Amino acid sequence: MPVITNKQQLLQHVQNVLRKKFALPGEPAVASRPLLEELIYAICRENTTPAEATAAYERLVKSFFDWNEIRVSTVTEVAEVLQPLPQAGVRARRIIGLLQKVFEERYSFSLDDLQKKGLKQAAKQLSRYKDDVNDFTVAWAVQRFLNGHAIPLDEAALRVLQRLGVIEENIDPERLEAIRGSVEHMVTKARAAEFTELISLLAHEWCTVPAPQCPQCPLRGDCPTGVHTTTGRKPEVRARKPRTEK
Ligand code: SF4
Image (cartoon, rainbow, N blue to C red; front, top):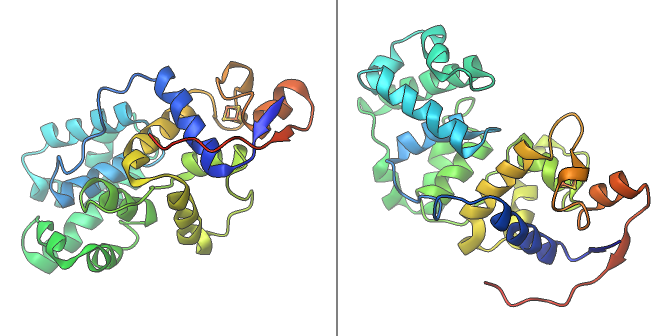
């Protein structure tokens, strides 16, 4: 079965197919939360689905009086609220750590003024909260709050993109930013937020660990791994005519 060899066209096709499969409740929200809250949401969102992250974030907001109460809570207390999110303890530690760093630096829980510094400076400032804020979190904030072009790549998204043959198999963590840059080159800014949501859903529904569920996946005829898994054959390559961007 022929597969699409142009990576940009393949990702566009993947997004079109997934859009029909998963009915997203409208366009993903941009700038719907203040920046600090968007970072905390992103910590919940890494390697989860939109529904899982939203439910955990809402439990967090409802269970504590304010961000300061979360800051002075124990990791166990915050993790209990985040569960059943995977790695709830790690996420809880990162959320408390981020709140502590922001509070020590500003005596407040607002980062919204970073928007005025411009995209590069704001992203650089956020990267300083390292250990709690990683490449995924910064890219999420750029996409959802700072109105820049970024595709946050967590392990789930990287796994999908590897199996689709869009990025290399063995990823050097030092090269993550460059890999993200190459994906951002292939997915336009207008499609970026929806792309992020759909790839997470694909990773959760069919492109799972340890093995993908290719026979059930709607992309099995387009994806090199899917073709190989379902037919045992090496995929036949075919270039697609460029399509007009939607
Ligand atoms: S066909 Fe298989 S490997 Fe490819 S995206 Fe679907 S589940 Fe993942």
